Amino acid sequence: MNIQLVNPFNKNLLSLAAEGLMENCALIFPKKNGAYRIAGDNNYTANFGYQWNKFAGTQVDKASKLHISKTRFFAETNWDKEDLSGKNILEVGSGAGRFTQILLDYTAANIYSVDYSNAVEANYQNNGPNDRLQLFQASIYEMPFAKAQFDKVLCLGVLQHTPDFERSVKALIEMVKPGGELVVDFYGVNGFWTKLHAKYMYRPFTKKMTHEKLYRHIDNNIDWMIRCSLLFSKIGLGKIVNRFIPICDIEGTLPTNVPYAQLREWCVLDTFDMYSPEYDNPQRIKTVARWCKKHGLQNVWGGKIKYENCVASVVKGIKR
Ligand SMILES: C[S@@+](CC[C@H](N)C(=O)[O-])C[C@H]1O[C@@H](n2cnc3c(N)ncnc32)[C@H](O)[C@@H]1O
Image 1 (tube, helix red, strand yellow):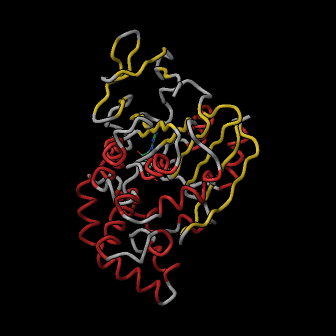
Image 2: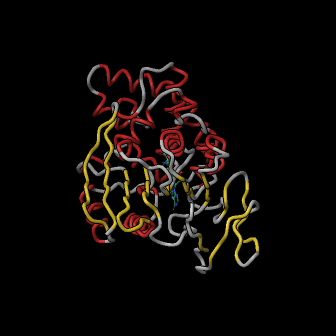
Image 3: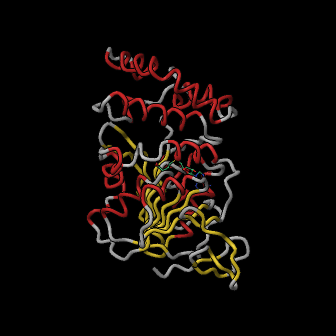
């Protein structure tokens, strides 16, 4: 694998051992439940740890028997045309590991997968143990790797949830080796109405609720919200009226041709995912593309990519 590990706090070299990451023969970052722990659980991503451990298999193709993660992954990266055998791929903000699974099952690459929350445990449950996978609980700003080593860096659905979008982009680019590629997707800004949405009205309150309380609240109300949302979509008013129902966008993001119980599970998860994060900062594609160029990418491409009934804002480029 040959990735040089470093302590992000003092830049000393680290080595991998069964019990954790070692610095000068001393155990510095323990390995617990399949992941090296550079960060603890008590940080602004605790909501994600809660949701991904509660819904570990919901969005993972091999558990859901759907192929949404695979379709999204290949539509956005276009990597199926490349031979990634033996390449080193860094995945940041991996959650329950829906894309880790795709990387492991459809490429022969080595995967280094990072998440700031204890979602790494859900990822391990879904994808471990595997000789080609190393899991790290660490922040995007404090990753345990020397710079410029990875052939590919992937960060899907994460950047809007970090406190400083541009700094996060810079941190990702630092990890890409010259000639390597970064691919990110994120919540895009699609005009002034982006923030004219129930999410931005209620989130200041809902993100302060305990995870259990918010989860119960969503679970107790999800059925009538699904009924209303589907009804408004059916009569052609979904795009306007559903913005004001505090539920995820069923029409534009979820599989609808599945049994009700499965749709309900996706809705509870995605609604929790909307209303619990500390940070939710959508960006314009052109702004993210500009930051990518500023921090060292060339051949930068930014645009919308359609897959199934979804549209993603994607930016990618090659490290100079
Ligand atoms: C919406 S989830 C997306 C997870 C996964 N990529 C997916 O699409 O299913 C966002 C993830 O980003 C992680 N995250 C947020 N801030 C982070 C940071 N500073 N460093 C690393 N991961 C972070 C969260 O813990 C969470 O698991």
